[in-house]
Length: 232
Image (cartoon, rainbow, N blue to C red):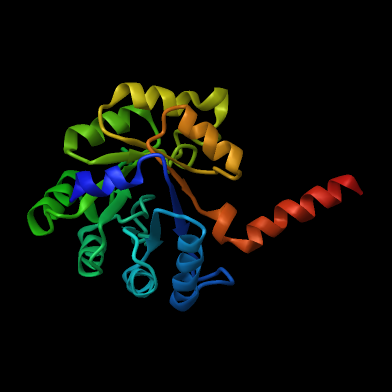
């Protein structure tokens, strides 16, 4: 299952359909239709947040889903599928792949990343695992733990990589990460234009995940208003 799903994503676009509680499009119904629009546009998979959104999306599109659950805990900065509770939610939602924070940051409630990997392998061996990382070291550690693929999702979003950019120095982080591991490396994080997505593939990315530039209209609108304000 893991190999088959990954092969289907090679060189393709994954669209992240997410809207948090404070965002205008926060609704499982809307995320389902957003996923349907992405599928009509040619997306090969959907990345989605929460079991309820994923179930709605699966009712609308026949595409593999990379599932996450975002949840804040007071004792940890990790919020992307941080504990076994969120893993259970994703297994129950029947996702094809689970993505989780695989950084070096301490997890909530003393949870260990290795335990989460073992849990999925034992309870749902057909589900693939994606490691969201921020550094080369974390990518190597994720491969050693047995993740099927690695994503640059958190580069620039951990305290020790703040300000870093996936696109800096002609995708140097992405290229170095690809050289450092043998599993597929997926480009995700501020890929805001088709040309940047194309450049990521040219740099060696296995596939590209795009979210805000497609599915967050408030952010898309800001790019237009900022451009017009600069002209004025």
